[in-house]
Image (cartoon, rainbow, N blue to C red; front, side):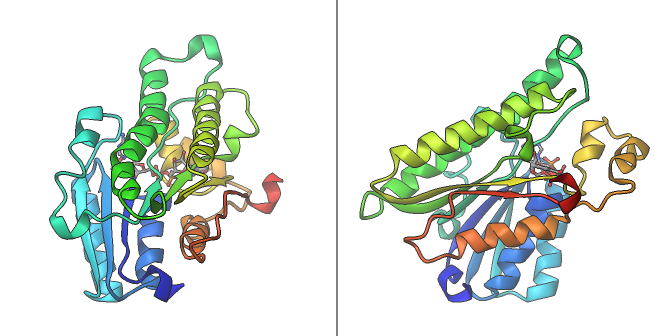
Length: 257
Ligand code: NDP
C-alpha cells in the first residue's frame, strides 16, 4: 500500500477535525515518503496546526499544503485548483469528506438556514469539488484515472426521525456517487463511497450549535467508532491495486447494527 500511494497527491476536504483530520494522518503514516497532502477546510489556523502535527509525527517526507476553502461557496471551489502551487495540482485522490448536520427537528420546524447549509455543503459542495478535480483525471490515458472517495453516512441508507434533511443529503450523495461511477465505467477513475455509522467527532457539537453537553450525551453509554477507524478504511480503498474498486462500504459500531 505504501508503494502504491508513494508520490500521490491527495486532497481532503474537511481536514481540520474528525474523520478528515484522521484521514490526513493515516495517509501520511502509510506513505511517509513523497506524499503530497492538500488539506482544506474553513478554519485555516486549525489546518496549519494539523500540518505541523503531521510534520512532527512523520517528518518532512510528506509535503502538506493547507488551503482555506468553504466547499459551500461555488466561487471558492472554482478557484481552488488554479490556486494550488504547481507541484500540488496533479491530484490523484480526492476525499470528499466535508459535511455537517445542523439541528434535530421534524420537517416543518427545520430552519431554512440549516436546510440550505446542509445541502450546500454535503451535496452541492461535494459535487462542485468533484467537478473541479475531474478535468485533471480526464486528461490522463485510458479515459482518465484518479480516485474520488465520498464520505456518505449510514443516514443515507437508514433515515431517522429528526434528521430528514441530513438523511436526504446523504441519500443524494449515494445517488450521485453511483451515477458518476456508471458514467465513468470505461475509465480508470474510481468512484467510491464510505458510509460511517456513529463516530465520535465534532459532528455532534456542530449538530447542537456548539452545545458540548448535548453532544457528549449522544455518545454516553455507547461505544462509537473513532475517526481513525474510518481513516483506515479510506486509506485501504485508496491503496488497492488500480483495477480494484471498493465501491461501497458501510462501517458502523456493533451497537448500531
Ligand atoms: P467534524 O465536525 O469533526 O468534521 C467536519 C469537517 O468538515 C470539519 O473539518 C469542518 O471544518 C469541515 N466543514 C464543514 N463545513 C465545511 C464547509 N462548508 N467547507 C469546508 N469544510 C467544511 O465531523 P466528522 O469528522 O464526523 O464529519 C466528516 C464527515 O463524516 C461528514 O461528511 C459527516 O457527514 C460524515 N459522517 C459523520 C458521522 C459521525 O457520526 N461523526 C457519521 C456518518 C457520516 P471547518 O469547520 O474548519 O470548515
